[in-house]
Length: 137
Image (cartoon, rainbow, N blue to C red; front, side, top):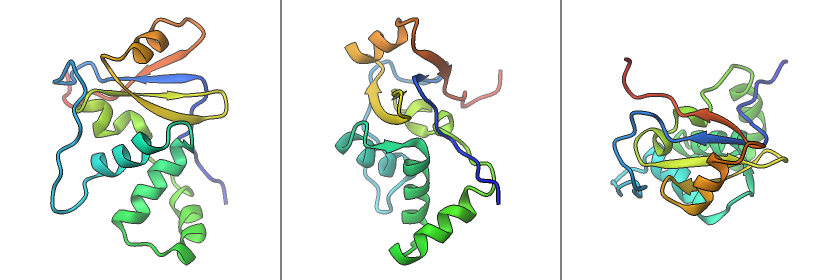
């Protein structure tokens, strides 16, 4: 079975062109955890600990109540089809966070107004790709 990946290396996923904020915002708390809040919690606590695949699958597993014992098989099934990468994350589209993937493919999240985000944005050795727009042109 061929497995697909959402991982990048040495890449900054920039905030979407139509992101409505110029300073990052923490996703609001709701009764049920949203995808944005799950991703935020994972990434804010553990910069450069996870790959994009790790984050995307872990959030999927939590939302779908997949037990620890089922996760290995569920992950294979999940990545047997192509999945949306973090370019479609609400953190980059709506809340003003960019994602930097290092040489090992591990990622960290940075507010658009931060010095680190600006450093990666202007570093010619870092690949750049924009988060997906929320609205079509």
